[in-house]
Image (cartoon, rainbow, N blue to C red):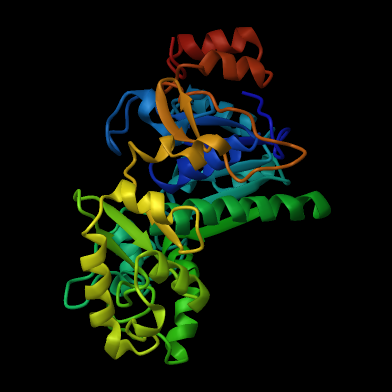
Length: 384
């Protein structure tokens, strides 16, 4: 599927998996790369089962189901890799080597190939072969210990930090960087992206603040972790929630004045000892009106305010609608490609392809002769 965007013209082979690898492939496909997904002939049983159109991070790219245990399947994969600019795989270290698709084997066919690998712990180290998931990766980096409210256990977040922020974004960025270098040197290389290291990278500013004594290791005792009254969420009269984050004094004055407080008389939030009093005052005041009433008073001002919207509400917010930040793709509302480019804008992705649904079309489009496609189907290497 040829795309529109700054990566148009690039060809990427993605080995189907779960979590960060397909998300990284989505990011590349969203921005115009021609990405093909190599699926197994039989369902892997991994991930959360769902109809293809709801598998949003598989959007925008066709699927080829291939039996890599068959010699012809392996040869076909190598033929496709020989034409690709990049490869993405998210298996445990050594898995690609065992099936005959190691970096050395792939670079022997395509020296310019950027070989992107994303794992939880990295390709080397004592934990490299250990199973894990997002929660484990962020636990080992200092991130999980910092999440949560005072006096409570670490808060279990969605798998955004390890899998997607620290994983998918990191390997996509690494692949893009390696492609730039390959354009200069003519040589490919391996990108070893670890979700644990990506999560630690996201946490880098806090390592600096902790070292400077400006951020406590105690949860819920800091400016940005629910300790402060002016960086917090509050419940409204109708049981909904709003967020406020006026860190700067001039923005704080806007919030307080619009809420009916005299800024000079409000507890001095520069003193953490006064945070509980300030938080109690804001909590009581926010409980006096509905979320809609607070939005009418505060939204769009310099109060650093936003309603807490759920996933059903967010796509319909006027700001998102004005920027077309969400798209209906195949009947499923989902985020539009990002970021935006002035000269090479991304197109609208197509819905996720069912595993193996485009096998013959992909092979034909990548130059495999019809007779060979027919032979692969007859021998069970691809779906008949």
